[in-house]
Image (cartoon, rainbow, N blue to C red; front, side, top):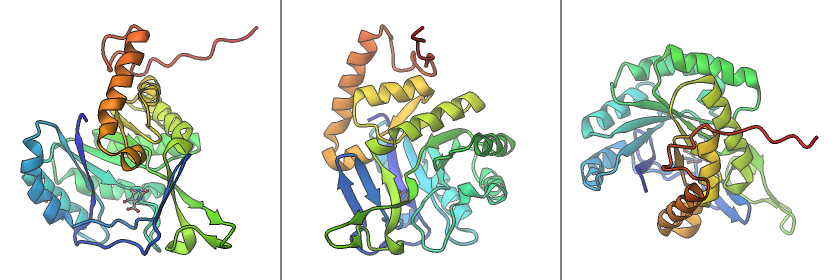
Amino acid sequence: MGAIAIKTATREPRTGNELPRLHLTESGGFNSMGLPNAGYRHYASLVPKLKESGKPVIAAVAGLAEGDWEAIIEAYDTAGADLIELTLSCPNLRGKGMVAYDLAATRELLTLCRARTSKPLGVKLPPYLDISQFEQMAAVLRETNIDFITAINSVGSALMIDPAQESTVLAANDGFGGITGPAIKPVGLANVKRWSTLTDLPIIGVGGVASGADAFEYLLAGASAVGVGTQLVKEGPAVFDRINQELSTVLDEHGYASAQSPVGRLKPAVTDS
Ligand code: RRO
C-alpha cells in the first residue's frame, strides 16, 4: 500500500449502529456502520508507530458537535499525521444530513478547519450527480484553500430488501445505507473526472477498485492515487500486492513508465462512422 488511512474518528469512542450493519454481495457492499471508532485520542496515539512504516498517514475526521472538528484536527496535526481528511459525507448518522450536501455549512466548516492546520487538508466527498453541484462545491474548495479531494464515499440513501424475510437487510435507519464496491465504480469514475476537470487539486479515487484495471481507470479519469475499501474487507491486505502487480502489467502493456504517467489522459471514444 502507498499510504495508511485511519478509519474516520470522532471525539469520543462510538460503538456504531446495531447489527446487521454490513452486507457484502458480488457487486459490492452495503453498510450502515454508524461511525464505529475508538475515538481520535486512541488513533492519534498510534500515529508515530504507523509512521515508522515510512508511509504517509491519512487521518480522517468527523465532528458531531461544536468544537469537535477543530479539536481532532489539532490532535492529528500535533501527532504528525501527514494528511488530514474531513469526512463530509458519512451517510449513516441518524437524523444528521450530510455536510457536503449543504454548501453554506461546508463553507463555514472548511473555513474553521483550514485555520487549524497547515498540513495538507482534504475533503472526502459523497457522489454528486448534477454539474451545478460540482461547480458550486469546486468554488467552495478554492475559496477555503483545500488541498486535496477524496472521491467518492459510498452512494448513500440506498435500500436493500430481503424478499424471503420481507425485511430490510440492515437494521439501523429503517434499513437505509451506503453502497460501495464494483456497483458504484461508474459513479466514482464520473466524479473523479468531474473534479479533475473543475479543479487542479490532487484526487484520491475511491469506489469499486478491486483490480489493477480498476485502478488504471481511476488514473485515466484524473486520480493521482486510489483507495481500496470493500475489496480490502473481502480479500484482506494481500489485495495491495495483487492490485499493484496487475497495475504494473497494465501500465507496461500501455507503454506508461509510471503510475503517474496516465493520470488524466482519458480519451473520448473512437466514433464508429
Ligand atoms: O461508518 C460509517 O457508517 C460510514 C462512514 Br463514516 C463513511 O464515511 N462511509 C460509509 O459508507 N459508512
